Image (tube, rainbow, N blue to C red; front, side, top):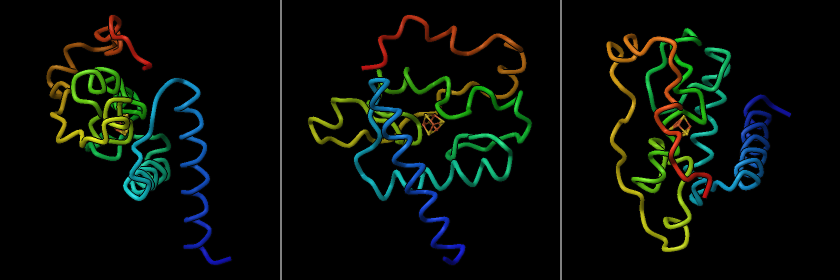
Length: 136
Ligand code: SF4
């Protein structure tokens, strides 16, 4: 098997695993399978590049402690699902988006700018989202 084919199989296998895990936890992946596979490809590429699943739609620092909030699933996923029906990348979508077959549209960046994140320091961003009602 050539490398390209082997990599496609790896994407497919990771996609299936992620889908299963998401559904078991009450989440849904974007039903646009080709789009979702491209994001899985991005996650696998970032894993090779940085050693962790940095969000494929954001510029990672490359130092894990500085990217903790954007390791997929990121700290902002649930808030974006609640407010916009999808995470920033569109990898995860809400039930409403799936059942009503609507497009989630563009999602504004919720991640605070670096200066603000530096001020927050070690405080995990998830504490900001504790009252959210996900998984749905
Ligand atoms: S925006 Fe979506 S794909 Fe990106 S890290 Fe968050 S949950 Fe993962």
